[in-house]
Image: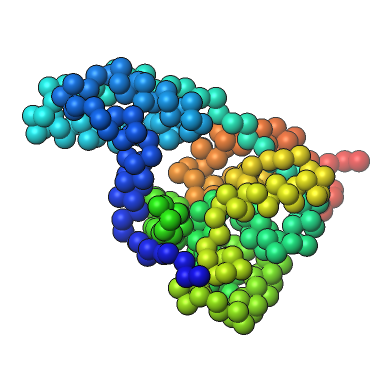
Length: 303
């Protein structure tokens, strides 16, 4: 079965807008007359999105897009005022961020590598990439000499089609240094993939299904949960592998700036704010590390 794939590299924003309109706006506001639309209509639509389980970030994104569209309707004199002004965006409690300890990560990797999904989950845990990023990786993205991988695209599924899109922000386009054992793991995976070559459309994809199609993140999340259960670990989200990568790196003493660059964050300040729970541990160990460096040669202070 050939995958239904669209190769899109400049229109990821338009794809996102179309999907958002179809899923989140038209079902609630599609029948409304534009000139008769009131803030209460938008308020109700946003609340319904929250009740459907959509994140606060999705609601805010929808609100920004609608405000922009309504600004244009004012220029065209289709509206006298913007219904989006004054609307209070419903708040949603942010899901608790969870991450593995080093010991839990070791237990997880041992269980994961015994399955066919081991390589993709190992890359997720050791690089901190987003699911849409590591599931969209292609073999040319890997520099075997430098042992790095370049994040240049994401993959998403919309209306039964797969789309390869540019990363949303320039900051998201980044090289990531791979651990040596991950390079070996990917080398083995590439050798096996070259022997299969089930689908020319996706023969350069690093991670794909047995039939040669891109991997759906929901499908991977299901198997991820099964692996957690088999390993006797508490359930966390697939996305929490990204948080685990950051937490373990910071706890190991990796510079927050390096971690921020690896994750593709907008700033180091954002990384520090997101993973503030790791900082006390880092600060506790800092004096001992500096002391060890200063006194390494002895004779600095009298015994």
